[in-house]
Amino acid sequence: PELVQDIEERILSYEGVLGIHDLIVHNYGPGRVFATLHIEVDAHGDLIASHEVVDLIEREVGSDLKIQIVAHIDPLETKDPLTIKLKGILNDFIGDIPGLMQIHDLRVVAGYHQHKIIFDVVAGPDCTHSDGEVKTLLNEKIREISSDYFCVITVDRSYT
Image 1 (cartoon, rainbow, N blue to C red):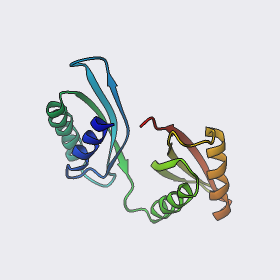
Image 2: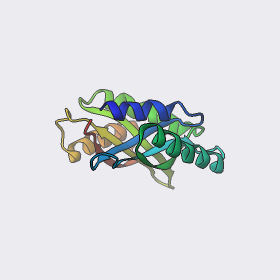
Image 3: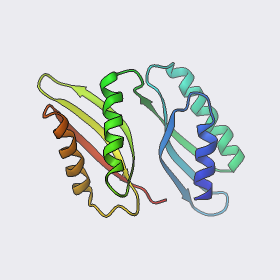
Image 4: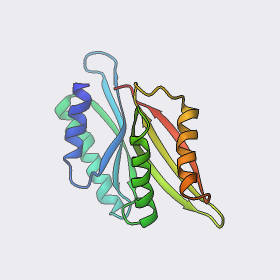
């Protein structure tokens, strides 16, 4: 957990980084530590600039901590009012369900009759609900807001 926290703090200090998730540290013995993660950047920003920042993070943080880092860029919607509103609502919902920690990879796909809300939710080790129960609980809460919403949810289990 100390290495995980160090990686998080260092990466979040870089300009243009809005957040991180899905951080996994693989330790295969001395000198063989790898970290994989997703780095959230503004979906409306410059893709090449974001890629350069992530490359820099992989080199600098990896060198400083003597690990190999492989990072994936995730564009984060920062301007769409519906996406921003739904993220707030979902964060409120997960606060009511013990063991749920975070929403990420939120996307809204508008259809003619229904809006598809796609996201991942992080469930901590203390979450007693099954993945199916988590999905059902969140789907029911979203459908209370509008029957036009349909959720596609991936439950990520956190191990730290």
